[in-house]
Length: 339
Image 1 (cartoon, helix red, strand yellow):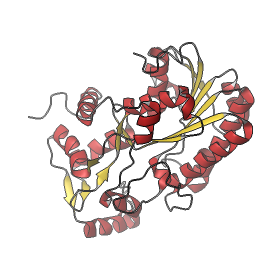
Image 2: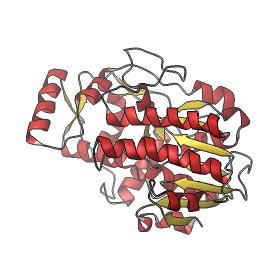
Image 3: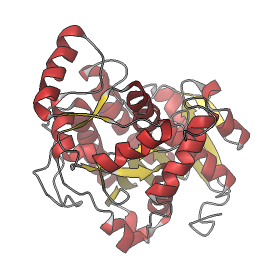
């Protein structure tokens, strides 16, 4: 069912990163529900058979390959720039190349191709580390000097996209998602269930700090709205569902595998971070992330609600039910739920 009144029906739409989690689901919904003529770029085209089955045309295109990206942009009316460096491969140089340089190239080529609307997928990580109990809305400046490479480069990439949009006369908008979870999500679903089921420490301190989830289809709803609403041009939007505590967040995953999420005090977590670095344990924990666990900030989607009519249609209870069903079907959990 279209949530944007078929505004993209028959429109030519490009999704970069269509072989990834967010891009794949976006491309699938654009083709199946919105009737768009969708082209998707990515690296491992065989990884997303459901995207091909939806009728999306997939093409291999390195983000820094100007000729390939120019070919992908040709004739497109809307571009969703989802592809990004997420920290899995390469270091700081790679992060800048993909999150900043490739974003600038994409905007330039989109403008050259006559694209009307360019939707940049940023992140709440671009804000950096806010003070405690802060309500972080879109007026908060992005932190381009923060120590976290991902957040720093997402901030720089988003700022550059808006600068070029003004210079080149193309409408740019940005979305800043929270922790995106749901079926096929690696970081905030698959990795989470693995850690909880293995009994790894996942809650630090009393667990009252805030998590900022957004269910994948709620995020896609917001992205679609930013692509078609006139008032979204030149604007950025937080896209988060209502906050939950980390006790609540990991509690969902704990119930899925019938195991109490393991908690340790903050002092022990600092020791673990040191061991993680020295012994190369490859745990998804560092000092910036640990500080995040103690924060009670919020990144409200008020602006998106007021300007675009965005609503979180899927509650966290329903989202986690759908996530659990997929985890069992995909073999990450036993088929039969725990008693």
